[in-house]
Image (cartoon, rainbow, N blue to C red):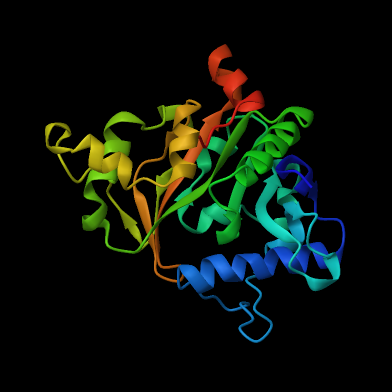
Length: 259
C-alpha cells in the first residue's frame, strides 16, 4: 500500500468514527497539551464537549488500521457551518472572542476547530489530505469566511511576545472582519514595538497551521485568549475566501500548504 493509498478522508458517518476522533483528540489535547474539561472522559480517553453533536467531523482514515480498533482515525477537523448555528446555540469561539462583526456580515461562515493529527502521522501527507478535503467542503457549500481558534502551546503570553506581536503588526484582520478577544482570559497581542520583533524567532514559534492560513491570505483577530483549561494561548484566525487572490486559491485547492 502506497502512502497515497493509505489515507482516505470523509465526514464521520458512524459512532465509531466519532469515538475514534474523540480518542485522537484526547491523545493530542489532553495527553500532549494537558487540556481538561467537564465532559472529558479520562477512563475511556475521549475529549468531547456539548458542541460535538452539532459539528461535522472531518476524519482522516488510516486504511491500514481496522476500524473496530477505534484507532483508524489519525487526523480530524471539527467544522460548523453557520446554517447549523441555531441548533448549537452559538459558535464555540464565542466563549473567547466577540464574533459580532462576522455574524452581521451576511457572509456564509464556517467555524473550524479541534484540528489534530496523530503524532506518528505528522510530517507527511496526512494534514495535506485533511486540508484538501476541507477545501472541497468549503467550495461545495459556497463558504465565504472561515474562522476559528488556533493555539500556541502554553499560557505565558509574555513568552510568546515575538510571534503574537508579529501577528498583530502584520496580519491583523480588516475592521469588517476583526473579531475581538473578550473576558478574563483576553490579552493584548501588541506586546512589542514592530522594530523590536525578531521575525525569525516569531516564525519559529508560530505553529504550522497558523502559518499555513497566513500564507493563504488569512488574518488574526484583535487580542489573544489565555485558555487555562486547554493550557494554550489562542488566537482567532479569519479567512475571507472571496478575497483570495488567484495565486492563493490555487495554493489552497491544489497544493500542499504545510510544506
